[in-house]
Length: 397
Image 1: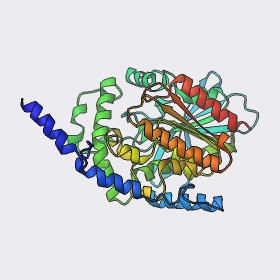
Image 2 (image 1 turned 45 degrees about the vertical axis):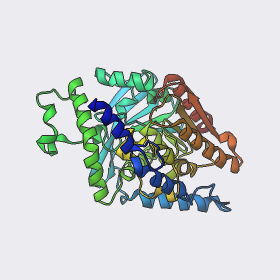
Image 3 (image 1 turned 180 degrees about the vertical axis):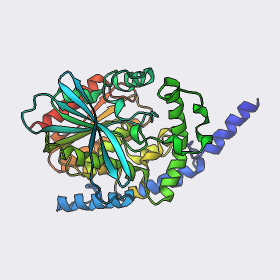
Image 4 (image 1 turned 30 degrees about the vertical axis):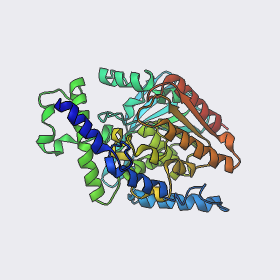
């Protein structure tokens, strides 16, 4: 009986003033109203922009300001850590600086038999609640633990797509993002109370990795508080690293600087969207599993998302589809999942419509494509093939 009463009480408390149930209860109506009234003043659809270059510069400048994270140019100081020959390409593990006192590792995949500078792609890994690895989630590695193999099976249909890109003739860079892989939490420099669950476990074992991922997930809130208190934003730090990845790619003689693209799933998708929107060196892009309007998340879909996506004040100027549109009229493909529980279908459709309108207004509707697949949140092999085909279509010209 008490459980029934508690359920009813919980539903009542969650209702807004109009009786609508939302994750933040009665706070939802005024927050939604605030979002609805945000002008998105730097959207290409906000008015007629006679000077597109001015629009892009203004939008990028404002986003970089909101991201609140700038690093003075730092020498890459790159180094090679490992070289592995694979059928048809070579995988090199490299390390380079992403800022003062901070480095990351990346896999660089170079196809065999290149006749000259080739098209290149920044392949961006996901979040997935899996922090122990970054680049390894979308790149073939030897002796991968079962927990990693299972993750690749669920999220990518069992195929690490970065290697497929290399087999198709692209030079591919797969960097570890901030808080993942080589940039993950350094537990040796943290209070022991945070790491007690790992006591007695062998580092790198399945049990260790699972518990590390749980610790890192629980630590996101404290990490976010610390980042924002320091005057930065988590997306600002994360997206900065992705732009440095382009710096590194363009330092390679194997890469044609006029044919660089990007692709990513999930938080890799939102990273791909911002890399394309903020970096004019990106010539074509694929955003998989993360393209919606922010308003569509407010009611009951933010509960499933990471602290890594929030940029205060952004809706006054640009919604997420507006950000990636800063790269228009360059080609953009959206890959969406009809069974994706992280987003609403209405939100995905609204983002598609908004981007379709931008490309239509520019007279280049054929350079924008959105495909839906009847699968949960993932980038399956058929989806990968379609995305790789899109990149090939536009980067091989």
